Image 1 (cartoon, helix red, strand yellow):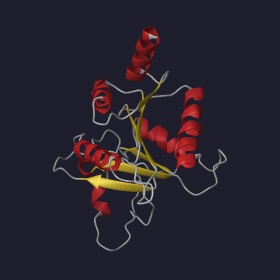
Image 2: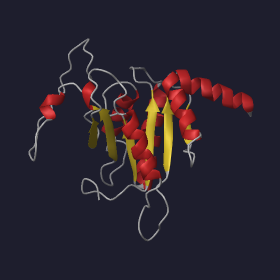
Image 3: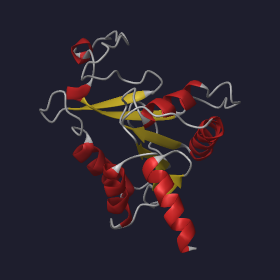
Image 4: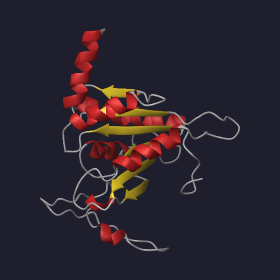
Length: 210
């Protein structure tokens, strides 16, 4: 049990652009309905970097519309695995055995980023860096690897499946895809085309290879 929750039956780890980008309205709707339906129907957890920017902001928009889209059976479990040194107002979160109030007020032009308020849970990863992205990368990769070999239940005994969803993205996203596909065992990758940059290039290449 983690956070008083049962372990996930599936992990959907969302990767993509870390800078803000727009989605076509139909793609935004497809993301919202598809992601939530996949998570709710399978008992999955959704992983992101937890920061209110880029692809994670779109995940937050989907989570915000969970009830309005007709999903009523419990709240979708969404875990933001965020780099501590990049979180805006992170010192407001320091405390032991007590509640802390996190105010989502961002300083324009600053190098720190707010946590996305729509996520249900967070893991804040501190590798010692401040104001730099990537502090969560190693931990998130190890966590996903651990879960991929973790039995869903003593009765079933099989490992927890993991699937990666790619939305937009840049060169680092391409590197992450390569690592997933060459991992042992390989992690399936779902590319959401018409979202921009890396996702669109991969969609074009895959269609040409058919």
